[in-house]
Length: 49
Image 1 (cartoon, helix red, strand yellow):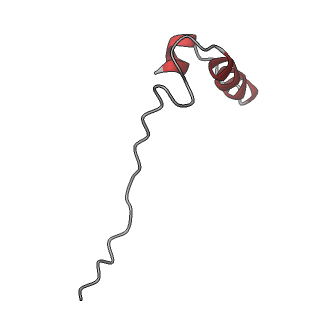
Image 2 (image 1 turned 180 degrees about the vertical axis):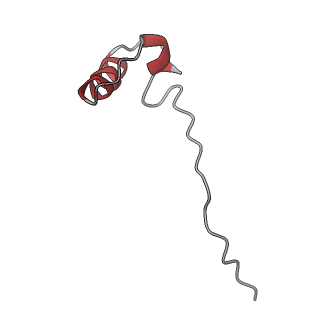
């Protein structure tokens, strides 16, 4: 038996259809508010990207 001690370097999430479903504004507005609370203004397009 061999073991692999490789550590995870990165994780890629496909948000489309999960947290940011096309046509749904609620998650987008929440993301925008989160950024705004941290003094970063983003557009709807940036939040969807």
